[in-house]
Image 1 (cartoon, rainbow, N blue to C red):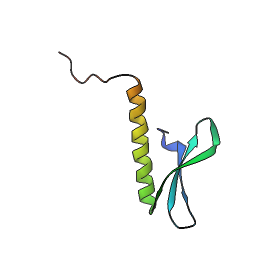
Image 2: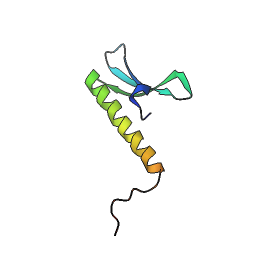
Image 3: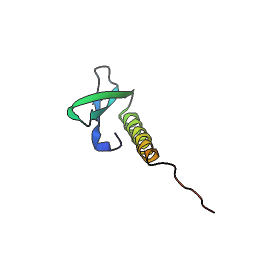
Image 4: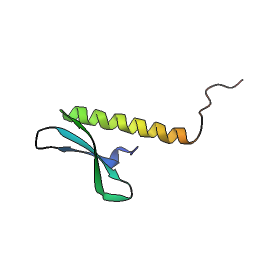
Length: 69
């Protein structure tokens, strides 16, 4: 979920764009995440999701030291 290659945008019959992410264990399975009115809005949503999941992965490694004395 933290790599853009795992995402795609599909257009729905109502004209909206849906962002979908692939299941890492089953590449044939896609899960809808968000719906947006524009293609740009959908891509921005994907970029935000990628940032979110990248930060979650970073947090798993423990606290980040920002200053030492």
